Image 1: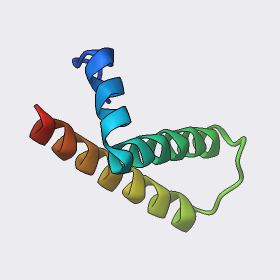
Image 2: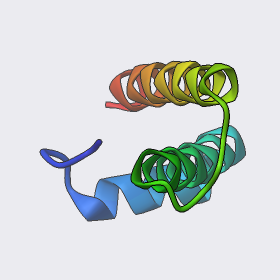
Image 3: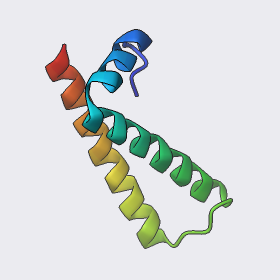
Length: 71
């Protein structure tokens, strides 16, 4: 998600902003779960998977907004 940004900047923001840190880890967990579900490792119904994907997208958008405001 933050491929073009410095890892040091992301780490600094995570240390300074609790909400950013929690959202970052939540997004990462959702990403892992969605990937597992799509691979068939994590059995989820389509409705639950769709909700997780939407939550992941909202988290990503919020993280990017927070990053842009910090820089």
